[in-house]
Image 1: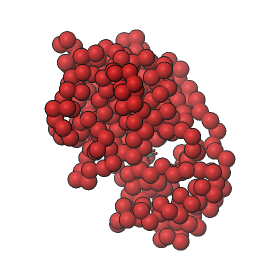
Image 2 (image 1 turned 90 degrees about the vertical axis):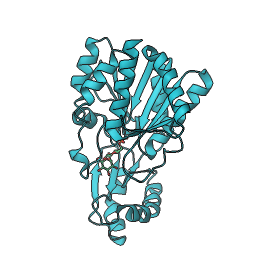
Image 3 (image 1 turned 180 degrees about the vertical axis):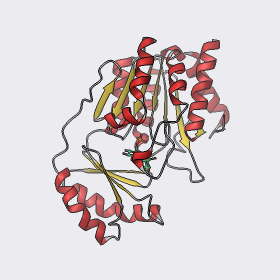
Image 4 (image 1 turned 120 degrees about the vertical axis):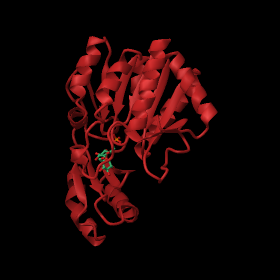
Length: 284
Ligand SMILES: O=P(O)(O)OC[C@H]1O[C@H](O[C@H]2O[C@H](CO)[C@@H](O)[C@H](O)[C@H]2O)[C@H](O)[C@@H](O)[C@@H]1O
């Protein structure tokens, strides 16, 4: 397994503490960049081909598995083939939880409907004003991802996506605020959505429902910071083992680098780590 660790000894110790109580562990995973390799077109993203077998094998050894994503819940169920994975988990007596739109929507293997709020007030007016703002900043060709509860402005197809993302942040933040919305910056994307929810609150809900004895959470981007913080705070309060995994691809080490316990090389590395946990838990 390709693995880079901020502090190898500390990371290994935290991993071992979670592995020792794997049967009580909640495993939470982000989708894009963690279970699904980053691709140029968001609609073309698919779960890693080995993810289903890795997650099903893992489920036999842990308490519950959750996907916590910025994607709409129904879309990630499709792109991830999650209904079939949930079927396999149900045969093991295990639940698959899905929290979409940064916790605003949920879906589970036992309750297969997407539950969530209506689109936020202000989103339609924001979207009506968006083309003019993009045009003012030379970004009319930005790919707009309609997410129902949110909208994503993708810059990946421009010659310098990071420069354009940085340039669009102030005007989009201002326009979002005018409509009672907030921005959620990510990898060459600026999402605009309702405030009041984030992945950390989804983690708190999961903790209340699952009552785990340990938590492993893996993510790759800014939107995972609140989940990392929630897991860390829970570990501190309860004294239970936690492991924060940064799924890292490419040369540019992103914002999670300083928060994670271990770093792994993208979805391949994440699945390698999960297989290791599965094998070691099986061996006892
Ligand atoms: O919380 P996540 O599961 O990581 O989802 C966050 C957003 O990911 C998607 O965008 C990212 O992945 C795309 C496909 O690989 C890529 O083209 C884009 O540049 C990335 O930012 C997705 O499009 C969003 O809806 C998610 O909220």
